[in-house]
Each structure stands twice: as structure tokens, then as C-alpha cells.
Length: 204
Image (cartoon, rainbow, N blue to C red; front, side, top):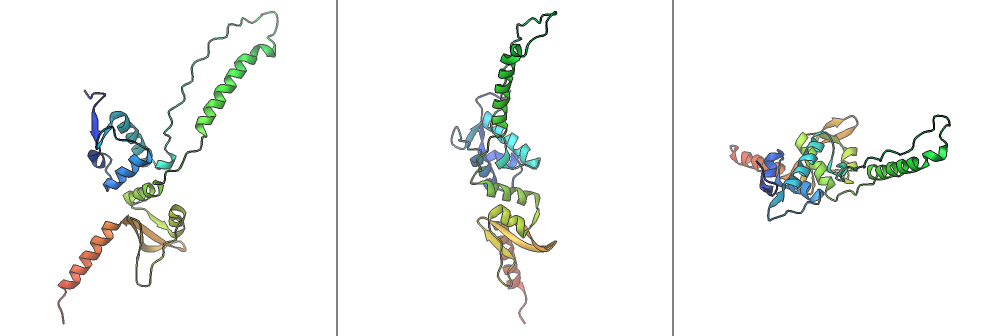
């Protein structure tokens, strides 16, 4: 049986969530503001939170709209000790205490439901990791909406670098250029392979 005080190694999370890089794990931990309880280790409660986030992301969500706040626990109202007079209808004022309590509970629940969530500064990279994972191809307008930058390439170039990610020009999506998002390591590997292949070509 798993003990409540058992610690989980962060190094195991990449395989647990089938992520492409350790940076993706760090993005999730930092995005949720999780502080390791020991060097390179997290608690079971923190693991459960990361499990919920992984399920949320695989369902189409993102770290920015993940509901971290706990559910509001509403205590049951005590049964009103009001015995209605069978010969006289109950007046509206007799209901006021219960109505006021219900109004306060509804207001409290609505404040949790619609409270604005602060966007993590790592949200862009979390979204890009998700795009890499699912191998989506996005039009230029979506790339600009996500990063705030319009990807452009020099003549003869097909790759636009953004941090540790690379946008590779693909076929048109409607009237816009399509972009495939990959890790920059992938582009570097491809360039090395092409350079090696050129050196192997026989000289005339």
C-alpha cells in the first residue's frame, strides 16, 4: 500500500505523462507553482494535482484554464423549525431568513466559479509543448495569437526560431502559411544529417 508520506521523483514524470522533454515537466510544475518537498521530489498530493492537469490537457484544456481552486464545500442548511399554520398562509417575511442564506451561498459559489485566473508566464511554452505533442499545424494568425509574433523567414529559409521551439513552414492553410511546431533540437539534428549527407556525396 502506498504511504501518505511517500515521495515521488520528478525524473519519473516524463515517462508517466509520455512527454517529449523534461522541460515540459518543468513547465507544468512551474505553471502550477508546485514547490518540491525535497530535492527532485514531490508529494503524493502534488502528484495528484499533476495527474489532474495531465487529464485536463489531454481533454483539450491548457494549464492557463486549469481550475486549481478546491471545490466549494457548502454545509447543509439546518431544517427550518417553522411549522406552517394550516389555517393561515405563511407570510413572505417568514421566508426571508432562508432566502438571505441561500443568496449568500449562491454569491459565494459564483465568486469561485467566475474568479479571474492569473495567466502563467510559462503558458505560451506549455501551449507550444502541447502543439508539438499532438503534431498540429497552425496558420500564421494562430501563431501570432499565441506568441504575439508573426513568424517570418528569409529568402530560401523554411524555419523560424522562437526560444527553444522552431516553426517550420508547410503548405497553405486556406490563404495563410501553415507552420509545424517542433523542438529546436529536431531542426539541429536535421541540419547535421543534411550536412553529413552532403559530405558523403561523390565529388565530380
